[in-house]
Length: 222
Image (cartoon, rainbow, N blue to C red):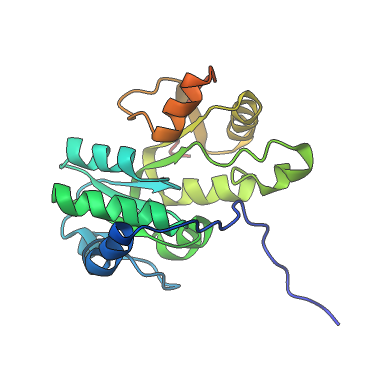
């Protein structure tokens, strides 16, 4: 008897405790900010009500840095994807208080969102900040940054669009550089954090003396 192929996921779903405020935000604000998963391309202009450039952030954690970006750049749109509901509820609570209008969120597997919901050449920027490094060698196959994933990133970026990655694990930083340098259709454009806000996770790592590596690659026209 044959079994269907199951994709190796880059995350383990640990829901953790969700607070009353986070659940209340999910209940009240999902209709405003939430993007339900359906296996069909999104109309991003209709979703945001305008044709401004869209940034996709994959795995936004508690969402505070993503909200800072949305507040600082009202001329741009932001779509965040996160599988962990407490972080999602935390972001929605803050977004509701801030009254931002250029933010939408998805509570689904980012790879499936990329493959099935994001149209080709529709994003100005993709952000992957501090993904799970899966630092044990036997777990490297779980790292989200793999050739097929990179090809999907290239598909959804506009020409010249930027893929910005960050990690506080040197080994993963080296993995990122190797994979991106080998990937067709990208060129290296820098290592600066730029305007990227410090995440709560990153601040904790810096206090522990961790290094932080940022890699930026732009999609080429060819």
